[in-house]
Amino acid sequence: MTATSSTPCPICGQQDQVIKVSEFKASLADPDSTVNTLLAGKTPEERAAITRRLAAPAKPLPLLPEKPSSGYILTLLFLVALNWGFGVQVIRGEAILLVQVLLLLCMATLLVVAVLFVYKYSMYRKELIVANQPDPEWQRGRDRWKRQYYCLRDDNLFEVNQ
Image 1 (spheres, rainbow, N blue to C red):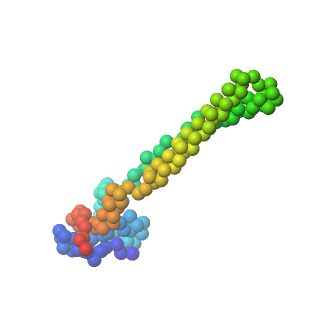
Image 2: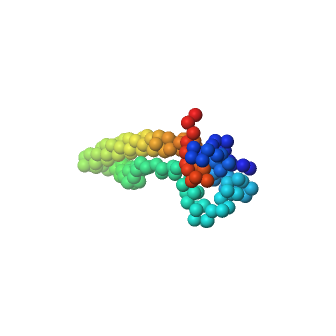
Image 3: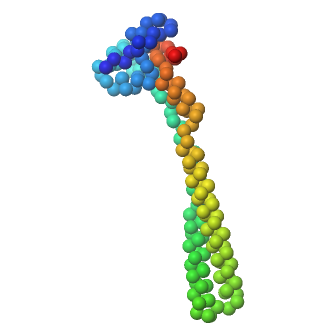
Protein backbone atom coordinates (compact mmCIF):
# COMPACT_ATOMS: atom_id res chain seq x y z
CA MET A 1 0.00 0.00 0.00
CA THR A 2 1.44 3.34 -0.94
CA ALA A 3 0.41 6.39 0.99
CA THR A 4 2.34 8.96 -0.96
CA SER A 5 0.33 11.52 -2.85
CA SER A 6 0.47 12.89 -6.37
CA THR A 7 0.26 16.36 -4.79
CA PRO A 8 3.64 18.13 -4.76
CA CYS A 9 4.97 19.88 -1.65
CA PRO A 10 4.86 23.68 -2.02
CA ILE A 11 8.35 23.97 -0.46
CA CYS A 12 10.44 21.29 -2.20
CA GLY A 13 8.15 20.75 -5.20
CA GLN A 14 8.46 16.96 -4.89
CA GLN A 15 5.73 14.46 -4.17
CA ASP A 16 7.57 11.28 -3.19
CA GLN A 17 7.29 12.03 0.56
CA VAL A 18 3.91 13.79 0.58
CA ILE A 19 1.06 11.96 2.31
CA LYS A 20 -2.57 12.82 2.89
CA VAL A 21 -2.93 13.53 6.61
CA SER A 22 -6.24 11.66 6.97
CA GLU A 23 -4.59 8.48 5.59
CA PHE A 24 -1.49 8.69 7.78
CA LYS A 25 -2.72 6.64 10.75
CA ALA A 26 -4.10 3.84 8.55
CA SER A 27 -0.78 3.74 6.70
CA LEU A 28 1.12 3.23 9.95
CA ALA A 29 -0.82 0.01 10.57
CA ASP A 30 0.48 -1.48 7.30
CA PRO A 31 4.12 -2.56 7.76
CA ASP A 32 4.70 -2.43 3.98
CA SER A 33 3.42 1.12 3.58
CA THR A 34 5.53 3.88 2.15
CA VAL A 35 4.91 5.90 5.32
CA ASN A 36 6.60 3.26 7.50
CA THR A 37 9.51 3.12 5.06
CA LEU A 38 9.87 6.91 5.16
CA LEU A 39 9.61 7.01 8.95
CA ALA A 40 12.22 4.27 9.38
CA GLY A 41 15.02 6.82 9.71
CA LYS A 42 13.23 8.77 12.44
CA THR A 43 13.71 8.29 16.18
CA PRO A 44 10.73 7.04 18.23
CA GLU A 45 10.36 10.55 19.67
CA GLU A 46 10.23 12.08 16.18
CA ARG A 47 7.72 9.46 15.04
CA ALA A 48 5.55 10.16 18.10
CA ALA A 49 5.74 13.93 17.49
CA ILE A 50 4.71 13.50 13.84
CA THR A 51 1.86 11.16 14.82
CA ARG A 52 0.57 13.67 17.40
CA ARG A 53 0.86 16.53 14.93
CA LEU A 54 -1.10 14.67 12.26
CA ALA A 55 -3.78 13.27 14.56
CA ALA A 56 -7.41 14.01 13.82
CA PRO A 57 -9.01 16.77 15.89
CA ALA A 58 -10.48 15.29 19.05
CA LYS A 59 -14.24 15.36 19.12
CA PRO A 60 -15.39 17.42 22.11
CA LEU A 61 -17.49 15.66 24.71
CA PRO A 62 -20.98 17.13 24.91
CA LEU A 63 -22.05 18.84 28.11
CA LEU A 64 -24.96 16.68 29.13
CA PRO A 65 -27.92 18.35 30.79
CA GLU A 66 -28.84 17.54 34.35
CA LYS A 67 -31.31 14.69 34.63
CA PRO A 68 -34.47 15.28 36.66
CA SER A 69 -33.68 14.26 40.20
CA SER A 70 -35.01 11.07 41.74
CA GLY A 71 -36.37 13.35 44.48
CA TYR A 72 -39.35 13.99 42.22
CA ILE A 73 -40.10 10.29 42.01
CA LEU A 74 -39.68 9.80 45.76
CA THR A 75 -41.95 12.76 46.43
CA LEU A 76 -44.54 11.37 44.04
CA LEU A 77 -44.40 7.96 45.74
CA PHE A 78 -44.71 9.53 49.18
CA LEU A 79 -47.69 11.62 48.10
CA VAL A 80 -49.38 8.62 46.47
CA ALA A 81 -48.94 6.63 49.70
CA LEU A 82 -50.27 9.55 51.73
CA ASN A 83 -53.24 9.91 49.37
CA TRP A 84 -53.91 6.21 49.63
CA GLY A 85 -53.88 6.37 53.43
CA PHE A 86 -56.16 9.37 53.55
CA GLY A 87 -58.36 7.91 50.82
CA VAL A 88 -58.91 4.70 52.79
CA GLN A 89 -60.10 6.74 55.78
CA VAL A 90 -62.44 8.79 53.56
CA ILE A 91 -63.90 5.65 51.93
CA ARG A 92 -64.49 4.00 55.30
CA GLY A 93 -66.24 7.11 56.48
CA GLU A 94 -63.80 7.56 59.37
CA ALA A 95 -62.43 10.80 58.03
CA ILE A 96 -62.97 14.04 59.80
CA LEU A 97 -62.93 17.34 57.97
CA LEU A 98 -59.19 17.82 58.64
CA VAL A 99 -58.35 14.50 56.96
CA GLN A 100 -60.50 15.39 53.95
CA VAL A 101 -58.74 18.76 53.63
CA LEU A 102 -55.34 17.05 53.93
CA LEU A 103 -56.38 14.58 51.21
CA LEU A 104 -57.25 17.44 48.88
CA LEU A 105 -53.95 19.22 49.68
CA CYS A 106 -52.01 16.01 49.00
CA MET A 107 -53.83 15.51 45.72
CA ALA A 108 -53.09 19.08 44.65
CA THR A 109 -49.43 18.74 45.67
CA LEU A 110 -49.22 15.41 43.87
CA LEU A 111 -50.56 17.02 40.71
CA VAL A 112 -48.13 19.96 40.93
CA VAL A 113 -45.12 17.68 41.52
CA ALA A 114 -46.18 15.40 38.64
CA VAL A 115 -46.50 18.39 36.29
CA LEU A 116 -43.10 19.71 37.40
CA PHE A 117 -41.53 16.32 36.82
CA VAL A 118 -43.01 16.02 33.32
CA TYR A 119 -41.86 19.57 32.52
CA LYS A 120 -38.31 18.94 33.81
CA TYR A 121 -38.11 15.66 31.93
CA SER A 122 -39.29 17.23 28.65
CA MET A 123 -36.72 20.03 29.08
CA TYR A 124 -34.04 17.40 29.77
CA ARG A 125 -34.95 15.58 26.52
CA LYS A 126 -34.75 18.83 24.50
CA GLU A 127 -31.38 19.75 26.03
CA LEU A 128 -30.10 16.24 25.35
CA ILE A 129 -30.99 16.57 21.67
CA VAL A 130 -29.15 19.92 21.51
CA ALA A 131 -26.12 18.46 23.35
CA ASN A 132 -25.83 15.66 20.79
CA GLN A 133 -25.71 18.02 17.80
CA PRO A 134 -22.29 18.06 16.11
CA ASP A 135 -20.10 20.99 17.06
CA PRO A 136 -19.72 23.19 13.93
CA GLU A 137 -16.25 24.37 14.95
CA TRP A 138 -15.06 20.77 15.37
CA GLN A 139 -16.70 19.84 12.04
CA ARG A 140 -14.83 22.65 10.25
CA GLY A 141 -11.56 21.50 11.85
CA ARG A 142 -12.26 17.89 10.84
CA ASP A 143 -13.03 18.94 7.25
CA ARG A 144 -9.81 20.98 7.12
CA TRP A 145 -7.84 18.03 8.53
CA LYS A 146 -9.22 15.82 5.74
CA ARG A 147 -7.90 18.28 3.11
CA GLN A 148 -4.37 18.55 4.52
CA TYR A 149 -1.16 16.97 3.25
CA TYR A 150 2.17 16.48 4.99
CA CYS A 151 5.65 16.43 3.50
CA LEU A 152 8.01 14.27 5.55
CA ARG A 153 11.05 15.76 3.81
CA ASP A 154 10.26 19.37 4.85
CA ASP A 155 8.10 18.67 7.92
CA ASN A 156 5.51 20.81 6.18
CA LEU A 157 1.75 20.64 6.70
CA PHE A 158 -0.24 22.20 3.85
CA GLU A 159 -3.58 22.32 2.08
CA VAL A 160 -4.21 22.18 -1.62
CA ASN A 161 -6.68 24.72 -2.99
CA GLN A 162 -9.06 22.99 -5.33
